[in-house]
Amino acid sequence: MTSADIGQVMDGLGREALAAARVLARSSTAARNSALEAAAACLRRRRREILLANAEDMAAARERGLGGALLDRLRLDEGRVAAMAAGLEQIAGLPDPVGRVLAEWTRPNGLVIQRVAVPLGVIGIVFESRPNVTADAGGLCLKSGNAAILRCGSESVRSSHAIHACLVEGLATAGLPAGAIQLVPTQDRDAVGYLLKGMTDYVDVIVPRGGKSLIARVQQDARVPVIGHLEGNCHVYVDKAADVNMAREIVLNAKLRRTGICGAAETVLFDRGCEATHVAPIVKALLDAGCEVRGDESVQRADRRVRPATEDDWYTEYLDAIIAARVVDGVDGATEHIARYGSAHTESIVTDEPVAAERFLAEVDSAIVLHNASTQYADGGEFGMGAEIGISTDRFHARGPVGVEQLVSYKYVVRGSGQVRPA
Image (tube, rainbow, N blue to C red; front, top):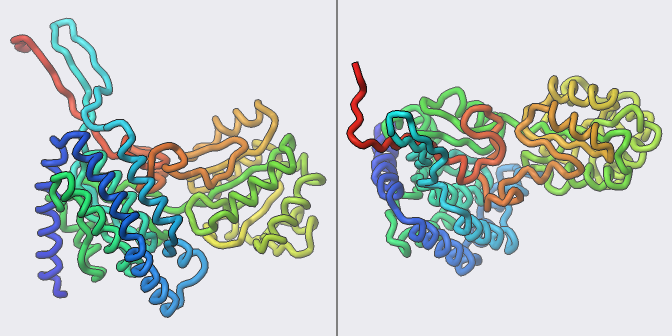
């Protein structure tokens, strides 16, 4: 496609999204929920078509040499399709975030002022290999009264189109405009550039979801606000007061349950006070499970299979069965390490000592902090949000899992009885 063609296509999407956003802003909760429930039913009914489309995407990805975590992100199965459908139903079951009165007060002159939640408008979502983002992002935007323009990566194009067809069916069932959830029809990379730079008349917010290079590009090029995170360099700190069996299970889960998600642990930190008791069994469990461990000298002494860690390892988001490991001086050492090397995403402390736990939770400045739980709980679905568009490490507007409540802004509604402002 020529640049002019791309501009024409993208502007068309923008006009439809803008018109749909106005309809959604005044639509009923029942209509939006009906669309979500119908889309969920369609996903279940068309699961074989979706899995066939995904099989084609997987085959093409293997031919292109993709492997490991990227293939895991791309892969759908019966369980993952069922989870997408259940996620849409969970979103439908959430309270409507639109129209909520966030605050209300009366001024001495009798003016009654309310702060009321309203949709953001049109949200552009750029994502790579995870086809489930099509359902999650579309569903969350719909529930929160926003129109969505989705641009999937080339790896997931067949899967995403099959999923998107179910969202469109859900909209039609509820009598809502198809422009409420649109999928960019071209894989031309210039379409992303146009979405980021050329659609300020239509798009209010951009949400990127993918690898570091994609998110960095979006944050650099976007001409509208961006909700996103750069990477998930997550940590588990094993305190001297940690139960060793609990710590081992949490570390194994945090690293290996799914290595390719942003909530996977990339570094495990050990309190020097438990170096003699906790390091060897936990490191051995990781190695025996097929995880490469790159450690400092203390960790290397615990198992000869540990490879030496470099300075770069402390900064790295592996998204693979690799973890960095280090011994630090208590909570102070852990918080200092995380502040220096972390990405402000998700960190966990394992300890039976309440004072240490509360210090860690208070002093670590990340979007999500956990006590005695795996970092893989960094997920909107696990937080009861139904799904998420992503985990934001921003400090403005939204932080942590971005669900329906994070996809609204607010306006002030002022009611008077003839008041005029004195000179």
